[in-house]
Length: 344
Image (tube, rainbow, N blue to C red; front, side, top):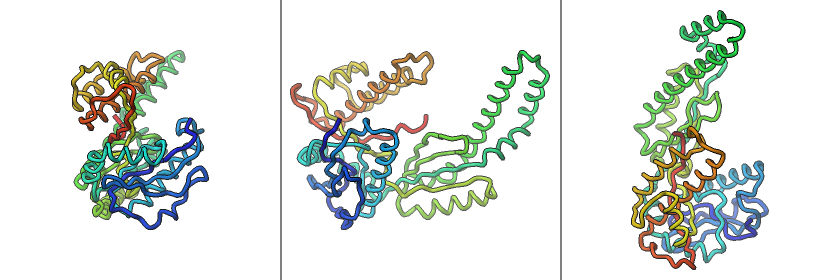
């Protein structure tokens, strides 16, 4: 549990000096937002007193997420920002300065890569009951229902499940087709695309686009055209502009040589490795150890978490090649730039 420290919201270039920091609203457990400058970078922070993010109940976690996003997004007019992972707290301001010095090259390079870029979220929904009514008229579904009505009573449950799976497959097919149509229209404006989870039956697609900030109006025009093309049958919504949450979030890693050896063992890597080797090995093992993988046991979630942590540790290390030789008794905090997992 964290008693207190310096809470990080975002990192940008040191030319950013928004005049409205005092106006940013934060909970009582936070002090006003301020900037810490070092190595040509500025970290937007607040002094924090309270529990670690993993110790918060769900309602407070949701409120913290919204507050965190509100602060970062109000800082956006100042320039390019790299959001920091939700709940990141360092010991004090000196630790933040040390981080900016240790990882300054990586952070400056990443700021350059994402300069003038913003994230746009695209969500499309449909009216589920109307879509289900259309699917019910599909010849294959109608045939399956007819067969289900003629089976013996003992087989009714199994037949009904079979029809339900067919309807689900038809919905998935329609959703995939519509998602591809949306992407075909929008992808020309995007430097990168991230597919996020579709968390409800009403949601068709949930896509994050990395675009030039001047292209926001063009995205809106595309959505208007899609709405007209489908005659209002689907609802299209743009979220943002946002910082590049899905593409470049700053993660902190405290690393020592013992932890490096453990991470190598988890990923089954030799003493000498590079970032592509780490990522390739992670992808191979993740397919086998994911909690949803066939035959996954009760400890799969914990093992997958350890695998993901090992990947982050070694990727961070690869991005700071001068720091490979650590004293086992010391701990160094490094930054890494992480992309969200998204949807498979």
